[in-house]
Length: 170
Image 1 (cartoon, rainbow, N blue to C red):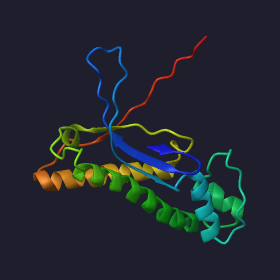
Image 2: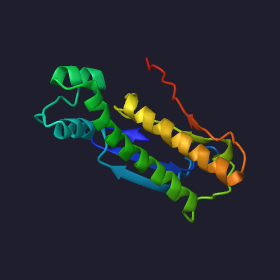
Image 3: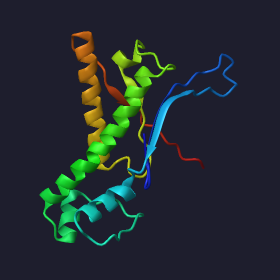
Image 4: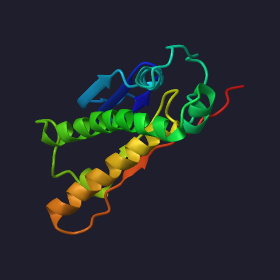
């Protein structure tokens, strides 16, 4: 899941390591979606729905509902309500990719990954903003519920967030 200024990019794929280890891995993409749901559009959504002038700095972090409301003379609850609409769009984008992957001819709905944990990584400038994290938690809950209903018992399905480690090159 890549959360940028302009778009939310969601893709499911597999990393197939080659036997010789010298060759680069193959990465077949099962399903993907790119939607105008990045942080720029979250800001635009807030401003347009609250009848505010469309003006902000994309280089600055997205403000919390409290900060945004205070700066623009709006109640926090108004901003939260507007954010829920946007949150729903983000949720539906992510869940649609997961659903399409399960039913795609290249995906395997019986794969152990659906029961053991679907590894994900979240990247991009908006990756730490709370609204997107809430959407991912909602997706996790929804998928877990569906798997549990289908199998008739609780499962250990979970989205496993991969956190890449960074090293400093000297």
